[in-house]
Image (cartoon, rainbow, N blue to C red; front, side, top):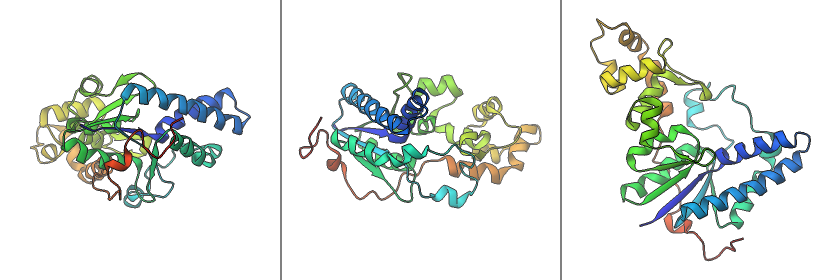
Length: 264
């Protein structure tokens, strides 16, 4: 059985860089050098702990993706990547390559969708997939068999985590975020529906579609959701990960350690 390890690369790198920026606020070159060294150390630890048969690092593109085209306010107001880090990404990708890890970057698709696409066929064939990320949005894939490791907090984002955090099943998370919105992505949910209410509604009705089609005569919160049907459905579309992106390579290209690369 194959075990694919996926690094949500910018999720890892930006957190490391943020720490280095605070420690060396006036020296951009030193920040990048320290980020590179710390990233390599972290990745070696991750590789040792996961012991994968295959590995890849997935990066976001700088180009606007399909979500931005569908919803121009997507991620509006988010803090931009520091210019020094942006200029140094090639260096960091080279360091990963020297560790035997190829990088995947799409000109049109976000890393989240690339990761969902990578994982789907493997999990459907009962292979193991471990994702290194702090992004809770990937928890929507848990029922398909994905394992998510939060490297920084040394915890698994698993079914127990979802139950504790949201009181729901992983399959309900997309609908949950469709109701509440996601502020970090500037995705609007239903005004007046907070997390507690969304959890209560989905516990009672199961899915967003059942909620939208329910008898709302006795429940003002249900009425409110139904009055904002288009808002919910747009948010649902934006939050749900695409898993059908043509990738142009296959699993054997990701074998670790590769035979044709020097492992430092």
